[in-house]
Length: 513
Image 1 (tube, rainbow, N blue to C red):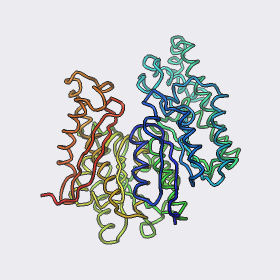
Image 2: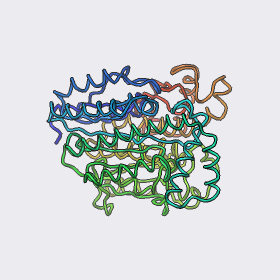
Image 3: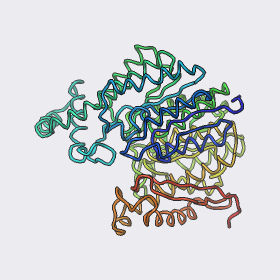
Image 4: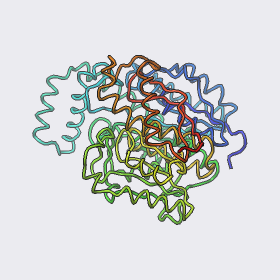
């Protein structure tokens, strides 16, 4: 069992709630004491966190800690977005990586879990989270890397070769040089971190990839790191798979499982026969291959049957190509014909009520939000607040990592107040905000108020007030009922845009008519 007063230090990936709050909230329902740096040190979107203070905090508190869960991108660059913007040299970055070696030498009792991203290469021209020039040249940078990779493999078609010639004539050399130079520094930092794993400084590491694609700069970096992992015989200590903002939760679950010498067995039940073979949006491989890694990274394994499982994971997958949650009102055969979400819910209800199994829901049917049909069915069956976990936000991997972590903790700690509050947060955010309110706000309301989805009127301005009002109405329609209701106590816009929302909620168990 986790020894009393076990202390784990947590360095988040950035200041957004998904990174700064979610793992911390999950830890509150356990016997771990998780400590994190003050929010004001974490930076703000493109403004990097205070790495001097963050390092000092980590080094000062390590003496009394049992371990740490560390986002390397925060300690090296100041956060996920600053990792794409920095002007650091390889020598500067390696110097920061080496500080972990000294930390472990001073405090050998520390168990260190780390995660470090491969720098992404978005497929679109938008500078919201990238260098300013990405607004004009982002698509071209991606396509250049994509086509050149296919050329190397001998599979580029003639139209792609012509496109590449055009890009090479137009794309400014200095812009490409800046972008590729930063990629090179970041890749060297990834390789330096692998050396720390080989030395035993880092005990376990995840290299997640957000916005991945099967070809291009990120795919080639993956290949290089995969080769290095094999050379160093680190396949059991370093996992590389799609994801990013969920990894803090994943490593928290791994910590609890390892400390308790537990390996939870999870039995996945999919809503679609072809669901295992869907390549989710923004990812580079079949859903089921990522699912395996997500379960293993959290310290579990896939069960061969429901009977032997500690947890049944109901995975609401699409029947073929994945769509965005904002389009779910449209008729699509992949959702209406080639899957059976009713059977998924009936199976879950049966296994919960008649077999006594822990049931969780990975709502990965759509990208960037919940499946409202599924939510209605869960409410009709009275399951919403009986689940071991639920998630349905952003990418498939973000959802998987979050729900797997929550539900693994549930198998050990049960329906704590913190668990019910986190379920309430998922329904408020993933379902009511991402799938309902955000869609409406982006489809005209924000513009009618004189703003746009990338620039609102502050974290707690008039847009946030409208969002809170609409959220409360959506909760009444989709969530609140005899099992209880969700009460919102705070609503703000962390990055002053509509994409993410910051919420503080609680589950109220009072009976509803």
